[in-house]
Length: 282
Image: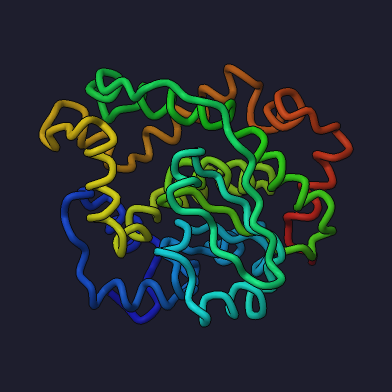
């Protein structure tokens, strides 16, 4: 792989099975090149504005997997000074948040809105195809249960006039974070190809915490056998699943814009301001 990894190379690598380790030497190159950001104490950290061809202004919107056991002094300094972040939006469940609260960083406000309670994972929904039915159900639940946190992210963009930096995370920075990233990229006018590319990059981004995350996932499902039908679909990311989710959002809300104005209650004027503040200013 070249010094600056090509999008197609990254996309191919992102299709690696979740139970197969990725080469450490290769990751060292990837994690020090855009769109990844080498933010100490975190993993799966990316700048949505540094995706190839992104309409979002670089240095404005960041996504991450969260903080690995707290945050180091170097991580705190980078968060507050280098990235100029004043608010971090936590998209985790009450149980996750209680088990590992966000770290305290001087000058940075940690924002967490308690989400609603979701239903148990139905493994049967992941058995067909590439697990599209299970993913759609889970992601639609994210839009419904985590609306308070998503609203907070959008309010930050709305009121920031394109200057207030936004960072949001969940546990792995994969699913809930991926839904919000896809929402923001869609509002900014990104292509479907670019949004899928960002979505799939989380397979690479979670590698530093992959084994821990898989262990947590199996325990959360009552120590399910990793060879159980549908489990591989649940553990992996598939472009087909994101596309199925987008179709479901269209059917339920009339698209992401309809979700923002309908379910979340933003006005059309506010939506226009959000979109304007996200995009690059020529």
